[in-house]
View 1 (tube, rainbow, N blue to C red):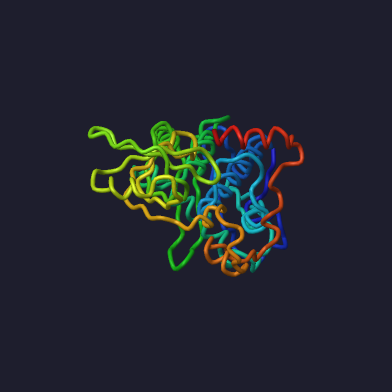
View 2: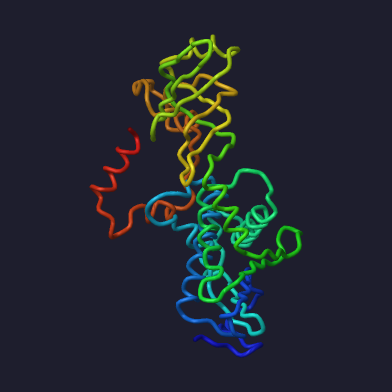
Length: 320
């Protein structure tokens, strides 16, 4: 067992309030004490949900193989700074000082607060899109409840952006509702760039296919009013926007109902005439590419124990 007397801190260097507190209750939890296996499980799952929420806030893919980006590791790695008595409470700060690269100074605090909002939305059955990776990580975190005598975990955050602290319990109800959401397709507005192919103009079924530059083809549906535009844009690069349906337990788009479609210059998809004599600045503007502010974001793409050939093979398999 790990034990800390009430009022003492495990890290004397701490100079600010913890950004996150996890209060554990249950018949197997004693005041100010926690078994090492339970501590490791709680810390691992808390860190995982924070990482996924950070990726979702930055618009990155949250269900993937391999580690998270180095910048998120720098900004959002939690550090256990105290174990308080009463109902055993784990206190967490950030492992490293905030950097000035890609995120705001309080990004870690924002992420922890967003996790609380997600848990609260699940608990209160609030509708709305939840990123699949975040949803899955909340499901795993809530799986700790009633494990070895833990009946509830409370997620407590500090003040952020002028809002007061948030306190939300993680119970079996949260786990059940996360499982319910994971078991059904998710719907949200998505934007995809690709080549428009294979349109079907049947009166009862209007479908087409978009082939992104990276990833698998996506089946699209459209309304009769868009028939002419779809016909004229066939075989060309387009940008579509519409309601996407996502497979359960993944972030792979199954279908999109097109609400808006527009043509794109071929260079926007990394194709086209390489002899167009465009400057680097012009190409960057066409493809909406911003300067790289932090080179460390490129690190950690493939784990050291990952077989590169298997990794590449999986990429190609996903494109089929």
